[in-house]
Length: 229
Image 1: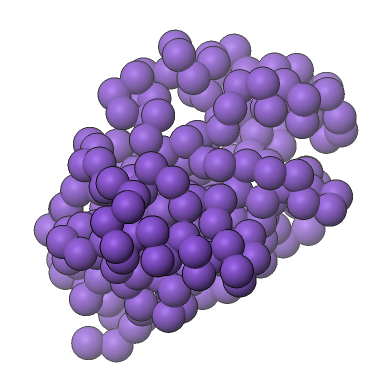
Image 2 (image 1 turned 30 degrees about the vertical axis):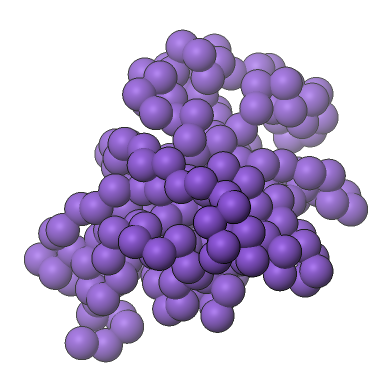
């Protein structure tokens, strides 16, 4: 099966596995020395893996998104670079060649691919393969919010033509408030639903909390995810 077929054929993406979050080492992806140290910690068992629940796909998933690192398509917002690391749940070792699929709302709270004229809109959606360190890298913007939900990014992980994880990534409320003090977010104000009142977050979203650090004019977000392949 080809790479494109493994992503777009819904019939072959049926088996849903669990997610394991590595308690440390998410932020260890920022530079090569730290990444190496993080890998050693995982491989020697110094870092524990914790099995966490799957989170809902939501209504805005579209199969067959573009394979690309930069998913912004000119949409304004605070720069956000994501380093999403995929591990084997059985060994906690980095999983090379996993397909990571993300999508999220723009600063105004809108998803591409829905509504009038949606067929031509693909912003803030994309797919990347993990490298030899199990890392998929995306360049995007800090997500916007919409009614009833905390700020989040949707994620799927595909291995061998199967979906092995469906989840959501979250952001600290305090950081969101700081980012939203500036354009283009300021006009809308803060989300109406913080993490603690979000119906998805309360069912295990804390394990999808990104580790975020200031990086140049934007932010670097990291997390380590383990999957049952």
